[in-house]
Length: 152
Ligand SMILES: CC(C)(COP(=O)(O)OP(=O)(O)OC[C@H]1O[C@@H](n2cnc3c(N)ncnc32)[C@H](O)[C@@H]1OP(=O)(O)O)[C@@H](O)C(=O)NCCC(=O)NCCS
Image (tube, rainbow, N blue to C red):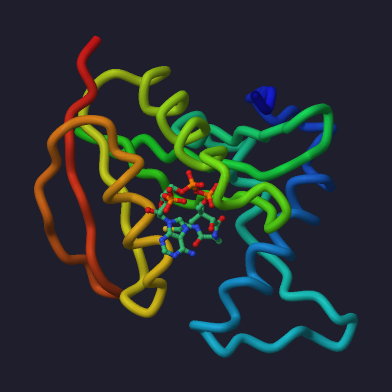
């Protein structure tokens, strides 16, 4: 079985997360239509906030020793939000995303939400499989949202 490892992203790893975020944005450009800037980058002005804000928790994923994705968890007042979640293409459709997501949820018992853009059919199908407990369906401004509570 594929070995997955989840590590909190350190300040030193900010450029690494920034680079993986570029790939994430490229993936999302299919839905957002976003263009790269003059340097060929999408850019992520809020990158620093993942270390500066104590309510934000950046994690990196390794699979068999290779960087394979990230999860950005944002504590809101009463519930945690999976703000961004990414698995590199090579590692998809083998259960890695599900194992990664469940490990994150289990690390933080309590109220959670995940949100998808309505055009992102893949993510909508994914979260319905990956959330390990009963959830309720909601809407946010860009599409569906699921809320659930992880037991301690
Ligand atoms: C969504 C994402 C995290 C899924 O990661 P993954 O490692 O492929 O997920 P899994 O292999 O654990 O998939 C679990 C189930 O989700 C569903 N699923 C995953 N990808 C799917 C796809 N492309 N189409 C339809 N269903 C899909 C399937 O039911 C799958 O089970 P199956 O492979 O046995 O059919 C990954 O495709 C990704 O990073 N996409 C780009 C970023 C993104 O959209 N993030 C989510 C933001 S809300």
